[in-house]
Image (cartoon, rainbow, N blue to C red):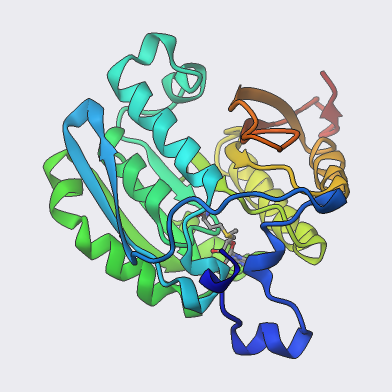
Length: 274
Ligand SMILES: C[S@@+](CC[C@H](N)C(=O)[O-])C[C@H]1O[C@@H](n2cnc3c(N)ncnc32)[C@H](O)[C@@H]1O
C-alpha cells in the first residue's frame, strides 16, 4: 500500500509525505485510502439517478489528487438524500436553502463531492482548491459536464486559498447558500487559515442581508490535536454531528459529518450562545 503514494517535491523538502501521513493516526492507528491507487479513473455510482461520476485521481502527485473516505461518505449521503429526502441526515440543512442552491466547496481535491452535489441537488456548485490543483479539478468537471447538465446542475472551478480574503470575495460574488468540505482538517498549520476563511464568509453573509453561514463538513478524525480546530470553530458556529459512519476495522472512529451554523448575533452585535 505504501508504494501507492510517492513524494511531491515540496513534501521532500519537508521530509514528509503528506499523503502517507494521512494514513497514520495517533498511536500508529492506520486508515485505508479510499480506492485502489492502481487505477487512476474511478467511477462512483449515483444509484438514485442511475448515473455515474467519473473521477481522475493522480496518486503520484500528492494528497490533493487522491480520493479520501470522507468524500465518499458525503457522496453517499447526497445520493441517499436524492433517493429519500425525508430520512436523509441532510434534510434539515438542504430544506432551508433556496430552490437552486449555490454551493461552495472548500479544498475540493478531485472534486467528487462538488460534482456529485451538482448532479444530485441540481445545484450551482463552485469547486475550489489551491492553484496547482485546479487543472485536475477542471479535468474532472469537464469529464462530468454532460451528466451535471442533464440533471440541471452547474460546476464552476475557482482558486480559493484558505486565509486569502480576496479569493473568497471573488467566489462569493454569485451568492452562497451552503458551504461543503471533506477531509480538510489535518495539518495543524492549516487550521487557522481555514478558520479565517470561514469567519470571513460568516461576516460577509451577515453584511449581505443577515444570512447565517451553514457549513457541512465530513471528517475522519486521525489525531487528537484536531480538537483545537473544533474548539476554535465553536466560538463562531453552533456545531452538530448529523451523521457518522461505523468505524472501519481497527479504527476508533468512522467518518463524521458535522453541520456548522454561524451563531446568531444579538442587537449589540455580540454572539448569542446556544
Ligand atoms: C485531504 S485532501 C481532501 C480532498 C477532498 N476534499 C477529498 O475529500 O477527497 C485536502 C484538500 O485541501 C486542500 N488544501 C490544503 N491546504 C489548502 C489551502 N491553504 N487552501 C485551499 N485548499 C487547501 C488540498 O489541496 C486538498 O485538496
